[in-house]
Amino acid sequence: MKRVKEIDFFKNIREIREYEFGVFYFFDNLVISEINEGVLFGWEMATKAVEAAYEIIGRDNAIAYISNRVNSYSVVPTDWRKFYFNRHQLDFYSVVGNTQGSFASLILERMFFRNNIRQFSDLETAIKWSLSKIDEQKQVTS
Image (tube, rainbow, N blue to C red; front, side, top):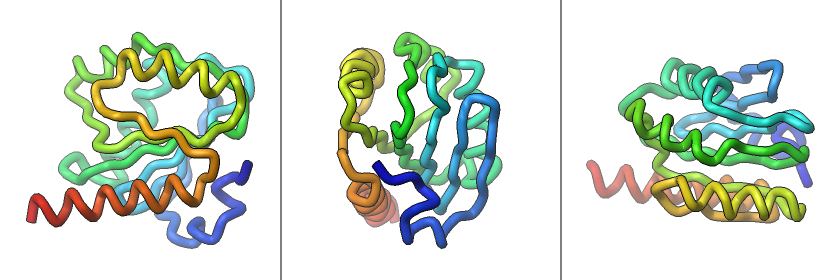
């Protein structure tokens, strides 16, 4: 699997935020994460990324999120409730991964995430899909 820095789209980067649990890449209306190996990704970590997204992209802009699962890690699926309780919104969410662990985690996340989660095996395909969905949404709202 490719990392964000290895693809041509990386030239569109607005900002990179590195945390002890992983790296978040911010583009126009798009956030891509690469969480570190073995992390149990929960609400406290997600809060840092959400605050950074609001700071960089803005609160009123549509946001697509791609979890580029280049490492094996776990997500606390019930923390999606905290995400919504705090009135956060992801317009589009996709997962890039092809390991058994990423598939199992995705099944749990689908139980708690309100919108559709798309799964991809290729990062560039996930980016194209996410950007097309953002463009569609912009056309509807304008």
